[in-house]
Amino acid sequence: MQFNRLALMLATAAAPVLWGTTYLVFTQTLPVGHPLLVGALRALPAGVLLMLLGPGLPPRSKLLPLLFLGLANIGVFFALLFLAAQRLPGGVAATIMSAQPLVVALLAWPLLARKPRPAQLAAALAGSMGVGLLILGPAARLDAIGVAAALAAAFSMAMGTVLIERWGRIGTPLAVAAWQLALGGLVLLPVALCVEGLPPMLTARNAVGFAYLIVIGTALGYWLWVRGIGVLGADVTFLSLLSPLTATVLGALVLGEWFSPMQTGGAVLILGATVAGMALSRRARREPAVQRPGSSEQLQPH
Image 1: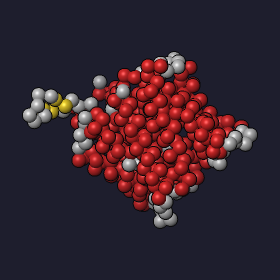
Image 2: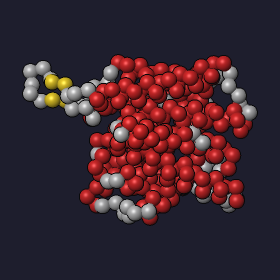
Image 3: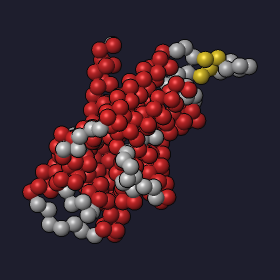
Image 4: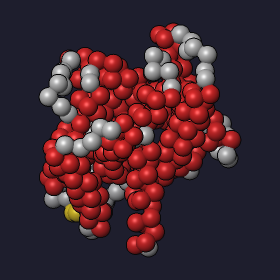
């Protein structure tokens, strides 16, 4: 049982690691002038591919919650992510969005009846500080609209993450990943076409980049992530801190952007916060139900 949980945690951690490769793939192989369209073409084909593996079309009875998940985790999130990236340096946007574990811990209180521990909040804040040390530089500047978009993006995906746990029986992990990718991409595609228009003729390099991003970075990544949330709970969001860490490591190895001593400290802080956050989440789940004062009702750990 212990080994199975560890294996599942490592498999779930592979998702943000795969997402950490997105920046390099996007900048080196894809049409960077059409970020919204790239996002839509990343999500929609991945969703269709996963649906072809078994789930098929989403049932009408579950269409509304699935559409909400697709918007929160894919459609709205991608739109806000690219708006933030347009108006902020990448390091600033990533740092602000690394607040997602903190937002999840806060949203889990009203939506999952799970009160956050001070230590869990401290781990989330430490992880955000680690990302800041890792990728922020002295040239970082803040733009009010960009900051608002980045915060809203963190809130959007945090809400989707918590609701996946709350609505865990809405379908199998493969089905939930497939349907939210397809629905989110379907909503984002017409918006992207209206805003950006058609991209230039795709090259062989673009095709390789899209193939990797759709099959590995999105279809596989989101299936692993949704499966992890379904079994381990929404607190796996601490693992999302591995995404900026992966992006920075790839920048050093591939583009020659090596770590400074401050960045090395940030990387260590991120890993420590990730391990601490998952350990605290597991300990909270093992504790027996807590009796509420003056009531026979019990608060069950999720």
